[in-house]
Length: 384
Image (cartoon, rainbow, N blue to C red; front, side, top):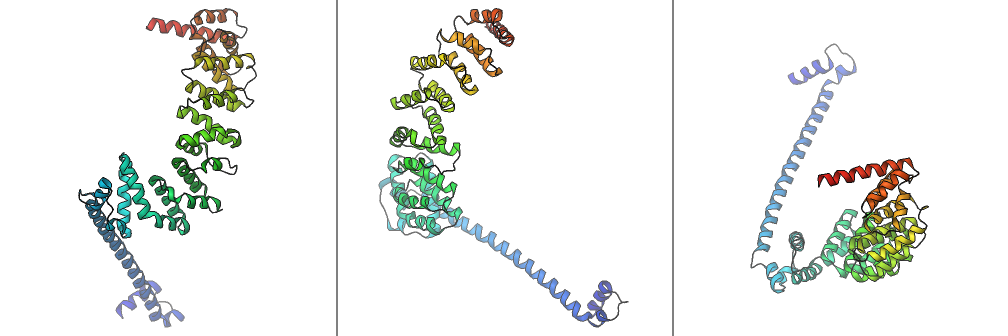
């Protein structure tokens, strides 16, 4: 009663009359019940947090113990990896044991496992995880499906490729899932990869396409180059980029690049020049011949192409390029003017040609650039 009177006086006030005065006990009971409920709720949350921390530590201890057990020299896993001996205990594992096994197998793959170990890991992963992966791909949440696809990629599970093909056909397949599936196709050399890259509705980025192209097996890569004209333009651009990164020096690559250089598309021509300059390092005569063709009618080409050609004319020398480089020193683009002067300075007679440009070039900016390049050459000789 004393506590109720105190609450009444402090919270309500002794001067109030009417309804509050007659319902003071009821109001105090409601406030007390709310406070008690909040306190109990906070205690429950705190207890749940403590229990989760305890359970997490306990699971980590159990997981560590299981990992140490599987890593021991006489464990069923080590005997399997070393001798190929499959025990029943290895196939009939609980879900927690499978998670530990999955982590250990992925770690072994990441540590440059030997060829026979890789084959055994792929076989075991299919036997142990195959059914659960298939189930997750069918009914799992998006995050679970994505993680499972990454596991399938790392374990090289070719047995699930038909299931992945079904996933690509449904509208619920997200761009990220499609990207991972195509990456799996590329790694495994699955025959569907070229047909999938021909589809126009893909919404992948250039970096994603490039990842896929760099993972292609040699046979798939050769088939894709044969179908170059059938793939979307974005894929075509990245194929040229991939030729340079893969350092593809096959006859097929040279034929394709030469065809594109002689074609009408400026962006593909520019990329093809850049790729050919890299993969054709031992065949400068071939590149020189293509540059001579460009030299006849290249003044109207786009800026990026003119810049690329100006750079190449400095690494692949021909006397026929000298007049073109001097003309390009008067180009509307400052970067091209500088690149043309720099390329001209690499020629044996470059010093003489730059002096001639200083004296006779009709463009005043070209004369200035030629003079600056001569000063740099002089400074370089003095430093030597």
